[in-house]
Image (cartoon, rainbow, N blue to C red; front, side):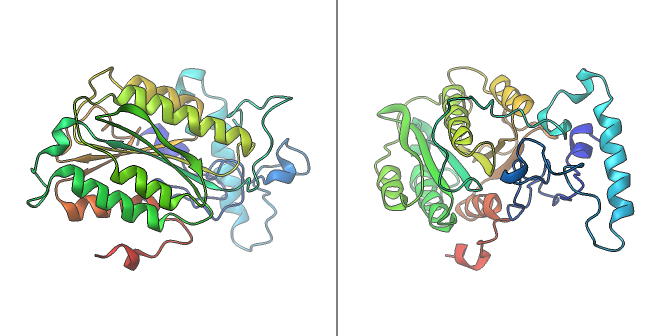
Length: 297
């Protein structure tokens, strides 16, 4: 079994088959430890998940898992290359003595979406008679409507206007998000490396405001290969130094994409409007406010 997947099992969070953590966990890095803001610096708990949970029948299992995690911590550095393999690591983001003012909601979820507006998105392959960009816009707008109101949502796109952030992470911005999406006009290249790099920077800046607490999702919807650089080295950097989830939906390109790296990345293939909708639905599937029925056309 892949070591990274073994490391995803945490004392207070048995992950779902999708690999996503439970967002109802009030912890700094959901799925990584069980400390809340009051114990951010390690005070008050002898163990990040508090083995004496008071739940009969759980403590033996928790102690066993804790022992396994302790064993993982003794492995050579090369065996713990990725952040998800280091359960005691809470160094992301690097907090500064004089950092930004704290966010109003330290536990907020964050969804930063990258939408491909390259020239190939004008094609009607996989669109059911419509252009791929029109199908993608519709699915993304539906996705935005279902993102919990308490979550921060941001948008980066590349199209006829070039690659740029169209909307910074924030709440109460769904109308502006819709305006930005509708304004995208498919044209030219696919600079995925630059897009993912920018998205990671924005999520890191938000993590500083949230003092590292909350969820961080970098969601990529694309129909082609990168035209600037191979984005995988950037994704590997993200995985090595942060708990950010990189979730890619390949629209009409099936499984052949550099971001499809089993065991490292979350990748879904969408080959028609319905599967694109379902793929975006899966990104939100474990949100406490999610209702799958709302996604049905």
